[in-house]
Amino acid sequence: MTARSTDAAMLRRAQLRLGLQTAAAVAVAVLLLAAVTLLVVVHNQHRARDELLSTATARIDDVTDPPAGVWLVVRSADREQASPGLPRGFPDEEALRQTAQDHMARSADVVVAGREYYVRTQQQGPNVVQAVLDLREAHAERFRILQALAVAGGVGLVLAGLAGAWLGRRAVAPLAESLALQRRFVADASHELRTPLTLLSTRAQLIRRRLDRSAPDRVRSDVDGLVADADRLATILEDLLLAADPRGEMPRRPVALTELAAHAVAAAAPEAERQGVSVRLEAAGPIEVIGFDAGLLRALNALLDNAIRHARSEVRVVLGTDARSTFVEVVDDGPGIDPTILPTLFDRFASGSGTTDGRTRRYGLGLALVSEIAARHGGSVSARSPDVGGTALRLVLPAR
Image 1 (cartoon, rainbow, N blue to C red):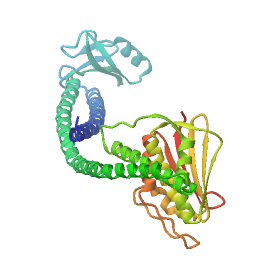
Image 2: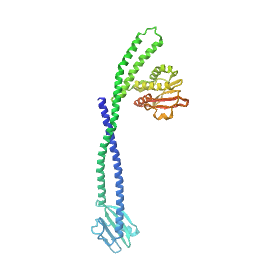
Image 3: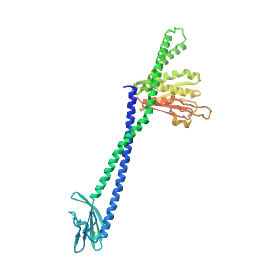
Image 4: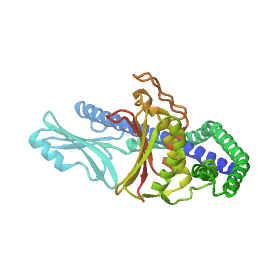
């Protein structure tokens, strides 16, 4: 699968997710609307039936002509009258008897032969009146309302999904184009750098071979460092290509973090010496993590570069570990971190402001790259200002 097809697949997935999320939001809104509508309808139906039966029983003059869907039963001491067509199973003798005894009105939903009725029994003068209301029409009205809401909701969901997918495509397309442009730039730059780096490494190795035994140790050490730095540059270039390729996966393997930190400290020593800053490594012993050594080396180099540029006289690289994590903390004695920059410290092109001593800490791509590398390794990076002053940047990685 090519990078372009990978980008297209990512765009389709984002488009589908946005469409589904939009449809889900509309579905929740439709369900809430349906629930509220149904509650309002049921409440109004209950109020209407109570008013209907109260009116029918209060103004009773002829049980043979009740309102539609209502049957009346009037029981006095010596006789009983009932509306024509009174459903089988009525009147409700128990309700009539209780109301005759305590003269209290009572209402209940009664199911007879699979049909539901609302029955209201109350004392009306010397008589006990029972009104029976067929609830079939009320139930049919609820069903029609729910059916209409379901149809409207279904159409709304389809339209919302299509609109969400269309909007998602329009929103994600520029991002996909930017990612493709970024990957092309990194790939092209890496390809162009590969040949000069190979030549540099080859020439450095030739120089090392041609040094005779009389060469000063310092020269030999510098040439060895040049060869090692050329090799590290090639490895870093490989890491950049992996980071830019959406199909690539970081090759995870055991990394001797203590040795890697020692290499980073040794590589940073010339620049630190030029700026009059001492750099020392503090590690209790050998520490290993699972990850990609080139990426971790890039992170260590960026942390050291930031610390050396801002230190007054000293930089410490502290390694530690516990049961759950391993950390590398780079501490300098320079100006502390401006609190206003902390929320965006690890964003690209974050910049600092002057401190009380007139010095300025500035941040560019380095710390943002450290944050990305930490995330690729399942870790994190944070910053703090120690009590004694300066800045401590901590890279935390999962323990092996």
